[in-house]
Length: 313
Length: 313
Image (cartoon, rainbow over all chains, first blue to last red; front, side, top):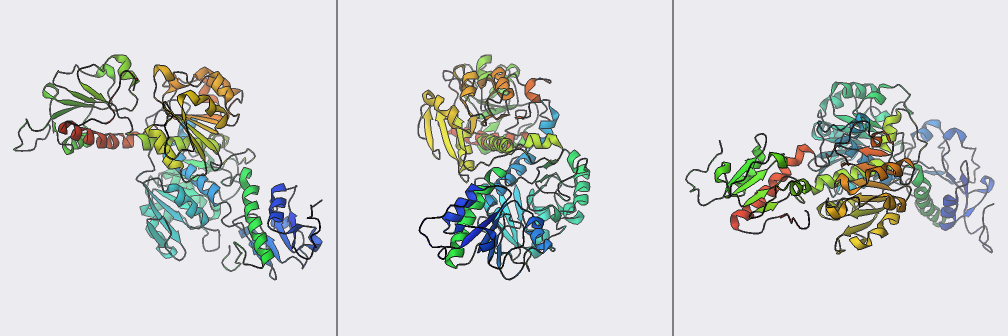
């Protein structure tokens, strides 16, 4: 039973309904801290969705004027047609930027230090070369929230940072800022290519055979965005042939990656099962965004991370 | 044949001899850039040692007034009796601080993210909890050069840092600075315990059964110092029993760790074969120190990282 602040007339505060498979106390607290009341879907002004797929979303009454989705990437929600007009929809864009950037850094360093090979060897073999981050060039393809967080985490290192955005706007902390049209400059220049762009029709197979061929043969590619941005078959070939140095993949295509897939077997690949944003912090971080967006909704202000169906994110 | 600057009388510049198993152009350049001449051991004023064990050090003529050793930890040189009086000896203390600190961060993050388990699983299993650095407490036991570099690399993260030094002096960037006498406060407080103290008689088995028992059951211990600082048998027990969360070990006792040792088999252990300072940067970084110490030697100034046989480092 949702708690209500005694004596507060219902008409004053918007009613928010949480759609989740189990009780989410942090989200309840966030809704109330943002100045709304919790209530049933039938009389909800807004809905917060947590760990629910588009197929499981119930029909929304007309009273619902805003839906907060739980993920930063919303391509599945757009493809399903769930995101209808007539109300506002927001993603969790930027919410998980820090944990995802941190995971990205962990994958980069694990690659530099050859951790997979060393773990699997189970013998003291110091014969293979490893490298340090200092002195390397890191390219971030799609320098949005994750990219900004990663750039912040890279500040103590002596690295060159190439930040690629659609517009090519100056990205703070980057050594060079490039536009999507200048993307081909990235491949031969980078020791680490970080993929952090949204999955849209325009970014599908952004990295294919030609791009991998243009990369340095000791470069690592790290994907914390969506599997579809990389042509998996071309990646397997490039990793097998030594066209590039290795890959750190938190996302794959297909996903989940099936048992026996060649990517599992390659010693220069580190795969994590889409956990860059760990469960342990998901509700806490979404709660912070929910509180702020509820406050904005109640105050009639613009919401953070509105979804633009045209742009695809 | 060492190059000599034409027309420069021998008496003006000190003669430095390099002891190494093969030619080291970066060290040669460093010696000359520091203002010395390269020359044979028989008429050397100083000696630079690279990748040579104490047993392989030739007898030094009396003319040698300074010996630059290649490693930060010099306990083997002290134990062997090679470090005699009557001349100055310097270690590479601080030289490799950045690559070692970076490796330490890589091991911490690999532990937080469960990378060993995920790499070995070869299947898409996102059921196990991982954690983020943000919000954790990192204790650095022996906050010298490596500790300072690690603290710098941790600045972008929202972590509490406990720095332990012998004296307890205020360590810049640390949340709390403790003395060796306050060490017992560290074990229950830290999510990561980083061992970065020199190996001396006083630090042997600094971490034993009692200390491990006092640690949190999800805490990781990361050793980038020397294997002898941890009681290996007690560590194996603690890792098996879930007394602590895991261990990242770049150094072990015994070292090299023999095949079949129980540490190799534990899924919450990541072992790297004493490569925190990778070969790829060793000569470059030592060269920078050699150049500066040669300059100081030629100018009659104090040298960096003089070895104190009493202190044991």
